[in-house]
Every structure is written in structure tokens, then in C-alpha cells.
Length: 149
Image 1 (tube, rainbow, N blue to C red):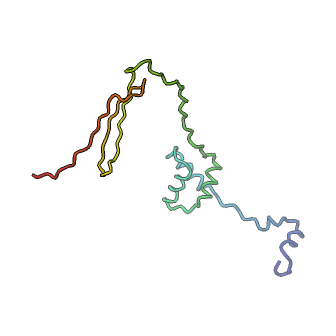
Image 2 (cartoon, rainbow, N blue to C red):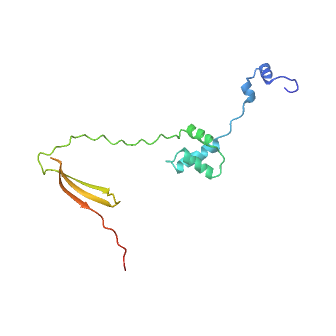
Image 3 (cartoon, rainbow, N blue to C red):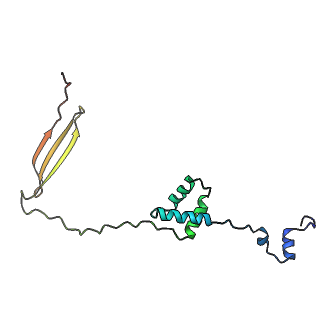
């Protein structure tokens, strides 16, 4: 073509050859990649493509991620994500109201800080029927003294 000063398009038209055939490059052989992925799948059947790729790279093989991914999908080794087992919805039951005082109590621990930055804790017992506080115990922690041993 350089001798006759013709373009690639014109030369391809003259010999009835599509231009894509002129630029066509042979596809590289993936047999080594296929064998390696099948070998890894036998040794480590629960691992996925990302872990296979990292193992291949650690072994020093220079295949890029896209090539390994293409062959992995071509072999049909792609696995779906794990489906989590859903916990069945619990049966909702209405809260039972107590029939009289003293039937059910609620216990609670609370803590707060005084204005002088000292902490205190309370233990509360409440009757559920009339919401009356039966007992409130207050505890202020003692200040630790240095040991004089």
C-alpha cells in the first residue's frame, strides 16, 4: 500500500476484505488461565474470584484482573452472594395490664452527676398498677483513700 500510495480503506475495498479483518489481532490463548482457575477451584472450592486472583498474583503470574474475571465468568464459576436466613417475624402480643397493686413491679438502675461532679446511682422499684415508687435506694461511691502500707 505504501508503494502504490493507496489508503487502507481503498485497498480493502479492491480485494473485498472488511477493514476489521485488516486490523484483526489474534486473541491470546487462555488455556493456562483456565487450568489455573480450575486447579484453584478444586483446592479451594469456597473461595471466589477475588481470592483466586490474589493467589495467582502471589504466585507471580502476570495476568491482569480483567483477564482472570473474563475466564472465571466464561467457566461459569461465578457464585451468587450468600442469602441470609431471615428471622421470622415474631407474633406481637399486647402487654397485659396488672389487675391490682403489688402484682408486678419494675426495677431500674439510674445514674447521674451532682453539681460538684460526684456521681451517684439509684435503684428504683415501681409498682406497675399505679406507677408508685415502692423503693428508691441511693448510692454515692466513696472516695478511694491512698493506701498507707
